[in-house]
Length: 209
Image (cartoon, rainbow, N blue to C red; front, side):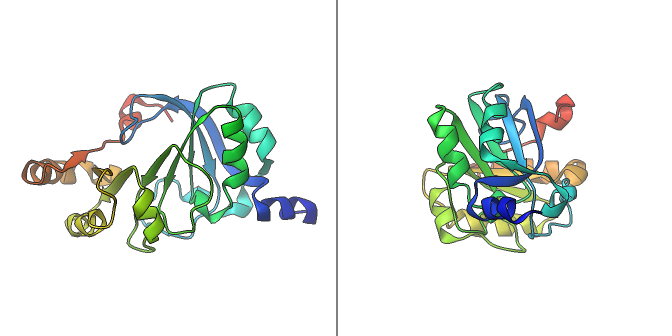
């Protein structure tokens, strides 16, 4: 990568973009809403069940100027979801500032393991055991979404729920490949612990991105 472009990446004026697409939000509080997704390349969390492992290596994805990301996004929706990969590995301030200038509602989906940059209208925290969130991420989370892959993840979920603010909405979501096994356990758990809600990857049932 040429030095001037790398300099822009270093300060957040350009970002490695794996993909960007207009679709229906499938998960969490805003499920069912039309939104434009921007998937940022780069992640070192290393979840073995990750369904977008191709996002991990940022070098594999083209660097795009923030101006161009915004120009494309505003053609589709007034809700933009920044996801990854792990978007907070990069400085999100230039991107969110530019989107705010266009009156766009900005959501993020993150593990919360890195310093929070940018201004967010909705903060979806999905903590991972490999690299835990910062306290700042717990404090500003609007929703906590814990992926349930095995029985120990219920214990993990409760530990994370102890750290979020009192207005945070709590979700348990079955890992897609284990959904048939874990969904009955999640239902039973929520019936006994009704502070939690179910999140499903409904976009996969709808066969949309």
